[in-house]
Length: 218
Image (tube, rainbow, N blue to C red; front, top):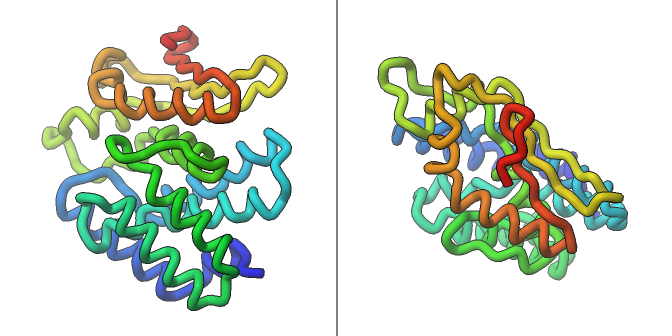
């Protein structure tokens, strides 16, 4: 079976992640390189592990998390669907079983707000892992060239995604420096993402909770 280690060490996949990050950097968009790929991978797998999914499903979620933004190497528009197709071809060429490659393709194709839907456990886990990556180190612009997206990420001093299984809650907890960004700025930028996270949590029969500076906002 193709493992996360196989995917992480694949030269073609690494080249696509590098190209995607470079293209978005040229557009002034926050970092979508290896740090984002690896964090999304780990958090997607950890979420499913906490919810008692079988190890292979968790491994596939990890692979989907790592590969989910490779479509940006083609174009930012419709990158989720492009990335899903690229991932399917790459994984099949590596020898992955067809049904597993399809499950990863579906997850990647359903991670971007506007076109996404949590139609499988992998989809829902990837959505939550991807949208919860809010951190200062993602910002590539320098002041005074920050736009509102940059400010929101730069203001995030700490973030964590936690599953409270017994309470039926998936919680995104943020610590924001409000001297850099107002809490309402976060909602202005991330409202569609929050809605998608809520839908993803509901797929697992759970509620999505957003906590900012120790205050529950949702």
